[in-house]
Length: 229
Ligand code: 5RP
Image (cartoon, rainbow, N blue to C red; front, side, top):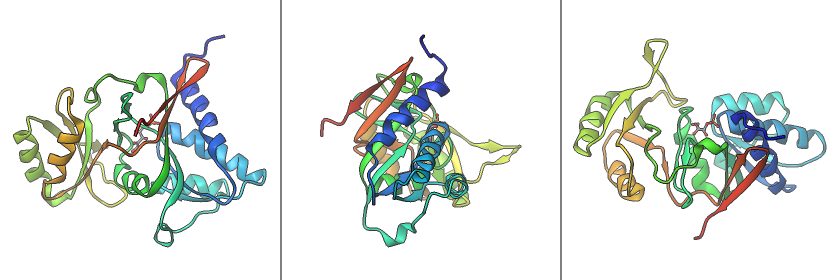
């Protein structure tokens, strides 16, 4: 029977991704509903004897990992992370990603940058030919938010500060998120460079050259897209 529910596709992708885990690895633990399934599966594997140490990408994931008795390690004590499993809001076959729908993009990008094998897990709705339908999350210092917004306009973007119960949503670092609309993004690398130059912009959700593979749930099976680099 075909499974079409996106959460079931996420769960299928998560189950496939944890097959890459090995004893003694340092494992980056992603944030969001897809990563949730991976963390739960890892918790089960730890219960059954897998020996890993996790590095969570958000306070929420840390709480979940602790509740599952997954041993954690301080990011400051490692030089690299063996494998990370995380979700994405959009991906292309070139493995360009938009991330940050859950607001954890800064820690996610730091963890991804330290990671040797970055596995992205998604449902089938996340695959696109060109990034940009999903609004690009951008983490900003609150003091700089109006300035950053002006700079985004110079790049033909518009944006609004993400809200939570009528107040600005705050990231785990106490920053704001601007959800920015640039229309479809023909050259994500070029936009990423331009965003990197804006003062007060802490990080953006374009993840380029970071993913090693995307495992996408697709009905009742999974499809894997690998980096050609
Ligand atoms: C959080 C993220 C998530 O990985 C992304 O939003 C995908 O979430 P989900 O797995 O719930 O669809 O980047 O900052």
